Amino acid sequence: MDTDTSAPEPWRAPRFWLFLQILARGVVALVARLRVTGDVPDQLRDGPLILAANHISPFDPIALTAACRVRRIAPRIMATGGVFRAPVVGAAMRASGHIRVDRRSPTVGLALEHAAAAVARGSVVLVYPEGRMGLDPGMWPERGKTGTARLALASGVTVVPVAQWGAHEILPYSAPRGLLRALGRALSRRPVVRVHFGPPVDLTGVDPHLPGAAARATELIIDAVTAALVPLRPDEPELPRYVDPTRPVETRRQHRRRPTAGAGGD
Image 1: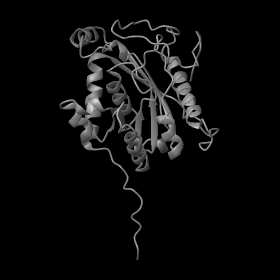
Image 2: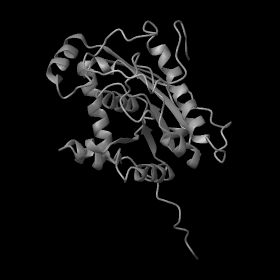
Image 3: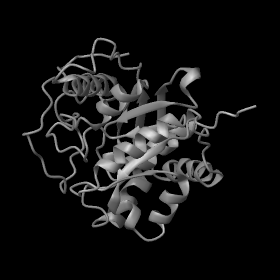
Image 4: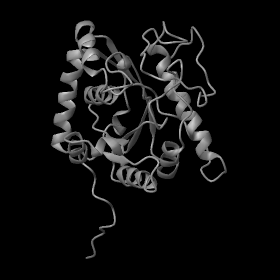
């Protein structure tokens, strides 16, 4: 009898990555008070699933890792190639099964292929749809790159927006410059870091075969991340209360949907 071997073997998170998630919870607890709200549907917890998060600080990957541990999710993170080239950290990223993105490189397209293969094996993949640490003056999500939307449309995998706030008070944009001073401040103040898992993004109205589909889906994803962020910063509707002096600002990629004062969210 013939055996069908065409289906890819389901991906399982390495124990080393699960250990790092536990470690991340400890690290976050030292310098901040983590508050996690929202969740993902139980049937999606083990994947396939795409988590789309905003990016505001060098510390937020650690905060998101800890928050995912709280929600019993072990995502494969799409991260810039520079992280993979770093001593020790790069080896840990590879051992954990994360996905390398070589931006501004001829091989950048391989990242989307690897992400597609990951969700095909049932992985949860965490992406930053903005494609960089945001430079919006109000620290709201910027216009996104289309990679996350193209991955979702091609695979049919659900996208859950993840908003986080407060990580910018732990490490500055300029890190590792100013690292020790920032950590000392965080250790003494232990600011609140909030992470919220929003409801799945509704992409059913986007026909992937029509021109502009990826751009439209990208807008919907960034809209969803923005909506999830609103209730995390109710007293900071325009500008952040804490301003990182090392962080540059840029307006050319501001997202068309701007939250208004008094806006609420689920």
